[in-house]
Amino acid sequence: MSLTLPTYQALKGITESIYFKPTIIWYIDSVRIMKPIKTESKAVRTLKPGGGNDLSYYTYLSDVEYHVKAHFEFNMNRPDLAEDRNENKHYCIAKRCIERGGRRDIFLGARECQAYVEPCEFDEGEGYYDNMGEMDFGLQYHSIVYPDEQSSHEMTVKFWYPKMVNGVINFCRPEECPKERVISKMTPKKFINGRNFTIIDVSEFLDDACGQRGD
Image (cartoon, rainbow, N blue to C red; front, side):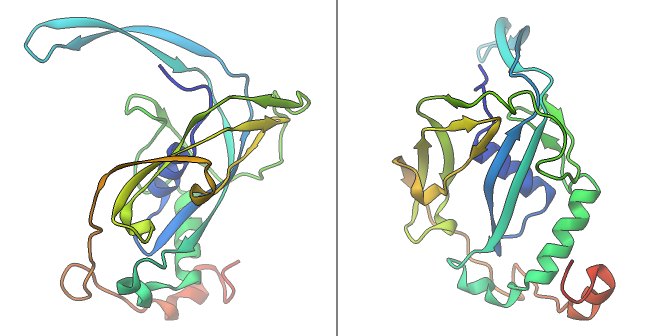
């Protein structure tokens, strides 16, 4: 059963499919719901663990379109990657990846729900909820914070109360969520230059890629 809104974590996963390195953390600022929220149910024949088939009903969102505003910040919990904190490099690569539809397959929540990404202006076009006022959606799942993105060695799930105003949802940051729950203890992976990670100086290529200031 699908949620009616794209979650912060789902949108973050899409940005990471477009471009990701452990040096950066993607933050989702806002999402604009462009089309009416509709669902459809499908009967799916699934395999049972003990053998044979079973019949399940899956309810998906139908015919969706979202405008997403996001930015990345350097992951300050990864001092081992400090030499890779080159803003222009990551900006230029992310920009090219968005223009080309991402580095990895894009899907919405489930593998069978394929999606596509392309650059857009957040406020362009007419959205279905542009003049609908405020809509509250109650307590919902927000995101998962992994240990390499926070100071503690824990995997934490976050919850919040989303509100849509004229089709736009402004996300709070994970650390601002009013409710959370620790799922498990977890140790972040360490990256060691020359062993499982190689730092390459690309500064000489930046001017050709997208200009001196990365614009």
